[in-house]
Length: 212
Image (cartoon, rainbow, N blue to C red; front, side, top):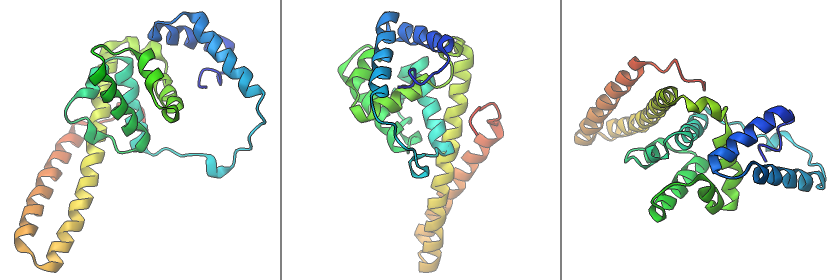
């Protein structure tokens, strides 16, 4: 669906070649699937798009999608790291991560084509949009990809800590009102530790991240 929506035929041909190379499939096969999809779509009645159907993605979801995009484009094994789950909060990206981990438990080697084929139907379009976002040829610069991957991961860590601090703030107010001094002290210590961690991460700066 993503490739079929590209109106410029030269640009579309460029992406077809990139996708075919990444999937290890013949260019003709990818092009044939696009033609088939376009034919099916042209036979359908045009759908009236209402404002209610337009989904606006927040910064967290954009960053999570970018992290998946970079990982699948360069080093999917990054998604197997222990603390990676905590960085994902939106339903679509969390499910794609879960499906990837499930796939890797059953396959020693990762194959993008097989993984996409095994995905539940409701995730296929979202996954295609994510992995095709940004020009794949830019991902050939490994150093640049690794750097941005680190920056995006740090940005998600910052968002997670801020969310955790909000939760702790609510607990602090509750324990203050309930005069539960022991629990209050424990939460205040944790709040202080997270605040320091947040400060350290923010000092490193995330100005290079494209998504704002």
